[in-house]
Image 1 (cartoon, rainbow, N blue to C red):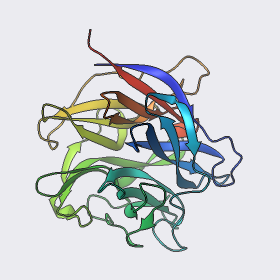
Image 2: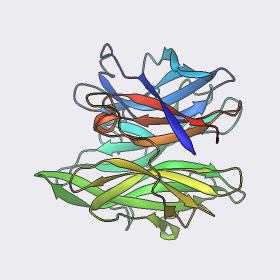
Image 3: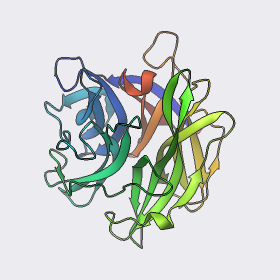
Image 4: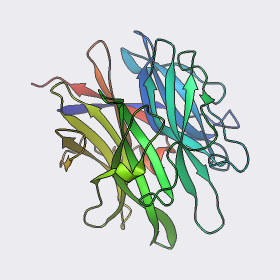
Length: 309
């Protein structure tokens, strides 16, 4: 498997007050036979993220066809779990015009840096707009997720749904700054809305000098096995993404695959590549959409899977 980096797709130009910079944690979905829609978090001058989209040509994902003029998911009401920013989780199709968006909402509190839990919104117009299913989280605080319970991918199964999540338990001081510690888990649900965290299973944990590993993006391959891409951070602040494989989506083995090497000096992804999300299109093409420097501040790029020689 070899991925060819095609280049940067999009970064906000700063003309919208709600989207001054960044396109974080991209989630692509095939909107039609001609269009791929990439959902992502765009930040204002205060660093607060709202969710918007960019449409690109399915045959050439560097060709931008349109950008959302307004957020498709704005901040929650004051005092709610998502009143200080929302980023992607995942977007899945439920029906011809119906999509379900899982998002991570941020809230500032007095004695911790933030809290981050998972909400759900629904679209009935093929992803043009979304409305919250409920104002409270569907994945809330749990013993293994004291500060963060963030869903980043979910898949329909014969029994219901399986989700892959990041759970944050504590905080780590690095170079006089405080960062969240988290690792990867999986949990099932009968309907994709009710989750029992007492049945959650750990999947990938930190290794070496890593102190956090998360944003698990899992997908099933043609042979029935699974692959998952995660992003980790180290005490020396080396942000990097990795691929893991699994026969069942529960027990995972991390690989040494370097799918997205950093770009040349002073380019948009010269310092890091992170948060990759795979899309297999109906015409047989496969793409990885990913973030570059400063965890998405410089926008979203794309790589294409090259045929085996």
